[in-house]
Amino acid sequence: MNLLSRSPSLADGDRLDIAGTSVRLKVNRRARRVSLRLDRTRREIVATAPSLRRLPEAAAFARERAAWIVERLAELPAAEALRPGMLIEVFGRPVRLEAGTGRARWIEPADGSTPRITAMGEGEGFTRAVILVIKARAAAVLTARTAHYAAALGAPMPKVTVADAKSRWGSCRPGPRGAAGNIRYSWRLALAPFEVADYVAAHECAHLLELNHGPRFWAHVRSLVGDERRHRAWLRAEGARLHAFGR
Image (tube, rainbow, N blue to C red):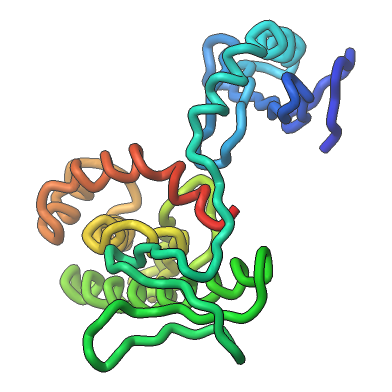
């Protein structure tokens, strides 16, 4: 992708340098007009046009709204590198980060006190090591909850993976003719309260039976976790903070 200032020829996915930040151009043929929005998950501004022909109009609109862009980006939660001594939450439990030797690991004290994650290094190296431990924790917990909900729905246990997804907290691909499918989660769900992450697991498992968001799908979700609206609201309100973690 090219970093552009002004260009007579623009393409879907090109980026403009406006007010010191990168603005992504996007063609959405379902859009009715040129628009500008903040993608809080990706921490970027998106200028959308309904056609390739109108991308220059979207670019011009973004340049006109430079002050708006600066204001919206300033509203995002500040990214903060991880460091020894920090107290974070993993599935709603306080966890202390500590400097250590050897391989990064999760330590669950026998006396029931606050769990710890110990890791070597500092700065980005320490952050990467801590995130690897959290990813492993996320995979273990979300796999267990997926097994629980798949069994409750009478669906085959899917293959579970975790990744650093930017646009979805989870995604499901059912298997053919009742075979095991695949569910993928964002590891950042480990930073949410357990009940919120648990709702996402129930949501994705419901897709094993209904690959849509119709009434039957939501009936499955509610049979598993009850009223899901508070969990969805939490993710909308706090999602940007979770995506700022460790940046």
